[in-house]
Length: 82
Image (cartoon, rainbow, N blue to C red):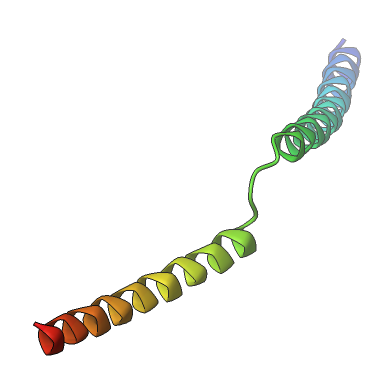
């Protein structure tokens, strides 16, 4: 009887191990599908990339500096004129 109960426990352990491996495979598959769907959703939303945001930021900084330079020039011309 001891040998038969050991065999049952061995079979149960093997079954549990197989079930855990199958669950991990399913989890990986679900993660892959979700990642693909999320990437597709983000791509369809037409969101700016980090590089595009950085380029725009540099353009804004350059425009602000040019604006400040022109304000100083206008102020100097107005002081000279009046």
